[in-house]
Image (cartoon, rainbow, N blue to C red; front, side):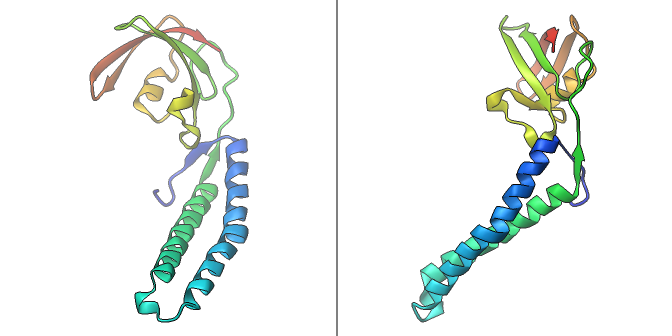
Length: 157
């Protein structure tokens, strides 16, 4: 994660991150400290795999805490677009794949809420960028590793 970069997210996502941070700094940190304490009680630390694993887990935990703090400190709250005449963050967009003739509906979200498996597409992704500010009826071309993909916007909600 880039330090100082802005991360677009909803207020709900920011709250989830804050709750996760509290959990990691309280419950999870105590659990890992207990693991280290128990591993130390086994004696010689030079050949103590439990101790090594616990210290590795502690490192991962502190890294995750730092990442979440960075996300929170650099959060940019985005609100769902009220407009329905063009695509914006929060829009639900139904598109037709012009190559295969299939229709799909996606929600355009900030980068921290993207989940392609749930059809939540980041506004920073090539697909999201290609749809932003476009209108119903427009055809968009998206540069993808597989080549140029063409979609027609059927509905914006």
